[in-house]
Image 1 (cartoon, one colour):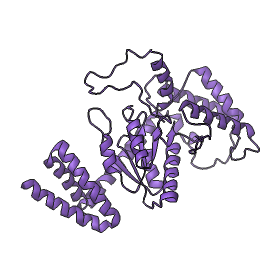
Image 2: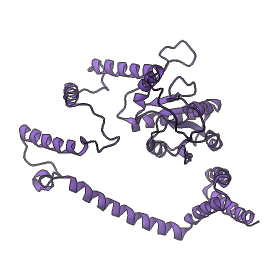
Image 3: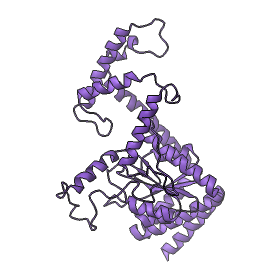
Length: 364
């Protein structure tokens, strides 16, 4: 009875809050109630009620002001700490007025002097990561490979891909790189069927690749289905670029919790969070925080059944998966086993690319 009274009060509060937010608030109410029921099954009604009680409390004006003030204080402290930490990484010379330029200098500097300074700075930065203390920030080979990259970049430093009539070999290179990636991730290169072939583009990095994929699915759903309030459904472990895409392109990102033990998202939870406004489901191969491959096969099939797109994010390490698969096919990974407490038998590398008919976009 106590839980029943609490749930009634919770529902009333959620309804009042939702009515203040309009139609979008009513949609949020439905999802909140579904999430409460799901969490009640996992954690018990009391824990779920406490969680939603806190959510309601955060909506009160006095609580919102206090939280905002505390967040401002924490942010200012983080900025101060970050500035102090970054300054400690610089040597004393770099902190001097002679090496600090906030405005265009009145006098020109000789090129040899600039190169000498940049060479010194480069050497000191390499000391910070060459010892193996960096994770995910540096993708490098040996010194000879660095020299090769520098020469290659230098040869095309003034090239502008927006003008293929002036830079036809840049266009040729980009097209061939895209073709290689399509082949590597098993995309269709022919237009023999109704769906057409696979295409792609080079971007500045993983974030832009995810942004473009989200925008493409938003535009497609708007043009073909008339969806004005597009939503993305993804595990909480997806890259922060999905948050940026939702913010930039007026989309709503619905994050679904993952299992605390396995780090995998429950496909049924994703299904329950999908609505008529869902335009994209996303997963990672592997994901950003834990390096775990999401159940791409099941998630992409769910998206296909519901007639929406699915994005497979392979930006952080996914490039090596095709080569690991070759090792697996050759039997060179037979000794790699699942953890002893795993209750399911899975492939070493489950499918994650355009082999799956539900995968409509991929970033790597």
